[in-house]
Each structure stands twice: as structure tokens, then as C-alpha cells.
Image (cartoon, rainbow, N blue to C red):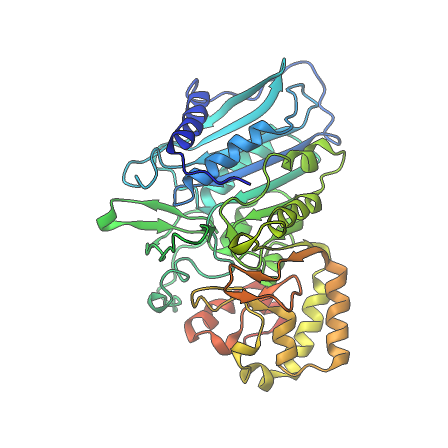
Length: 436
């Protein structure tokens, strides 16, 4: 676990990354006479979008990654890449900083950080355009039969950009006022720093870039559909080291973009994954093992005490999601009145501080009045697609976890008209018909 308040440690980590990255503006991947075996080489990208309050934690993650197992630099060795973007100094969002794409490897016993690309200062990393550009570069320059990505930043699941911080200020765009969507133009949203209790651990709350002085601060956030659209190749797995991504909405939207997705239904304490041993599962093994990463994540928190014993995690086989959508469509249609009359306090929740948009999928269906036969059908479908799941008994002393299906979901009777309108645009709702 990584708990440090020593600012010198954080600055040293930042200087190591910057100094390794400042040697060049752009370096093409090395080319030699070696014939690459695409079928055996694996590529892992850590996309670390830290122009936000997580800066120091994300720099620590990269430092831990360097301390673990690293591949060599032969043409058939696996490829470990890190996209990193943080403020130069914590909280200095008005001073535009530079993102880097770095390759990490071992050579002659030394850890090498090669800067492959330096992006313009002020680049918005929490934009679909930048995610697409980085992944496109990886695809074009590192041919492989296996690609995987870890996405580390703030996140708020399926919610539209800015909704989590300011739900009352959100209006779904009507006809004639549609915003520019997709990978072409990021959209700033008002930035409201959430209240933070210093007695509690910090959490990772897809992506957030904060810019501007404190008197006029805005953030950029991706929406789920834009995130999915930005991915230019099929990934073996995506692991979200970010809050609240463990929803059926997220998995279903990404089902054509990755084979497996690992994520948390609740928030993620800021230390996140165990980066010191992460590559042993994803690169050192002959076949990537994202389940091992999820298991390590859960174990490191389940062995803690107090508020630090707080974690939820599941790993999903995205190829097995259609039966879940089919059984849910039948149940939602049969229990429409029950869904509308659910008492929210009776449903298993995964949120704190009134952010009431994340409940357990099975718990919702039970409270809607589903029959035991319907529940059995749901569980059969879930058992096929949930490869791994784990949860601590409670989360940060704020709620107990008594039901855990491996998916969170929106509860329409405890939502809003504007959020319903947005929810209808999600592929999950179009398949399962939760909101009519």
C-alpha cells in the first residue's frame, strides 16, 4: 500500500518522469532486422490522466510500476507504455503542462524510460480525441496480437460529463442544441471541487482535466459513448483504476471494444491497484491475467482495517453480456410498476454523499418484485459473464454490502427527468429497456 505525505517524495517522482521525458521531443520506436512475432508479443498501456487532485497518487503508481517486473527491449519482448499527464505542481491548474508517452523496459539491469512522444502543453488528456490519438499511435507502432489498457483517473461511470459534480445544472441537449459529440471536440464543464473529509482516505472519483485559475476553473470529462468510440482496436482487457465504473452500462457500451473489463462498483481509494506486481500478471505470464490484478486489488484492501478495508471489484467477460440483457429486458417489461415503486433505501447502494445513481443490479430486480424463477435466470446469466468478484463487508463505514451481483445500475425511480433522457442514449438501455 502507498501512504505518504512527504512532498519531497512526490516531487522526486515527478522529476524522475520529467527528466526521463525531456531528452527528446519525439523518438520513433526502434527498428532493426529482427522479425517481430506478433502472436507472442503483448502490449500494455497505462493511460494515467492526472491533471486533477490525484496527481501525486498517479505519479506514485508510475514509480511503483518501475519497481516491478519490466520487459526487455528486444523486438519480440513485450511492450509496456505509460501515458502520463499531471500538473507541474499539485493544484497549479492555471500553468499548462505537457503529457508524455513513455516506454518502460530493462536493459543491462537498468530501468529505462524512453520518451516516445511529447504532446503539446495544454493537451486535454481526458478527451476522446487524445485517447484516440494515443491508442492509434500504439496500434500503428507496436503491432501485437494482444493489447490491454489500464485507465487511471477520476471517473463517474455512465453519467454525462459534469453531472456528478452538479446534477441540478445538467440539461440534456434538445433538438437544435445538440453539443458536439465524439472524438473531435472536448467539452468543458463547470468544476466544483467535492467536499473532502481529511479524516477519510482520498478516492478516485471517464477522466478529468482541470484547467484555469481557482477563480475561473473548468474541467474536461469524457462520456462513456465517446470513450468507447475513441478506441481504435479490440483490446483484450480494460482495467479501470477509477471510481464507480462497475456498472452494467459501462460493460455493455464497451462490449465490442474489449474482451474483458475490470472495474469497481463503488469508489476506489486513491492508492488503487498494486502497481508493483501488476506486470507479473499482465506481461510476464504467457497469457494476460487481468483476474490476477483484480484479485490482488481486492486482497490488498480486504486485509486492511477501518475505513481502508473498503473495496469492490469484478471482472466481466464482455462476450457473455447478451444473455444478461435478454433476461433483464424480460424482467423490466414484466415488472414496470415494481421498478417505479421501489423504496431506494431498500436497495443495495454503492455511493456515498448523496450521489444516488449507483445501485446493485440484482438488488434492484429483487425489489421490483421479480419471481424466484426470474432471479434464477438472472443469476445463471451473471454467473456466465462475471469471471471474478469481491467486496469488503462495508465501504468506508458509510454503507454495508449485503448484496453484490458484480454490476451496479441506475435506479430510475430515484433519478431525474434529465438523466432519464441521457440514459436512453446508452446501448444498455436500448438493449434492456430499463427507462422507457
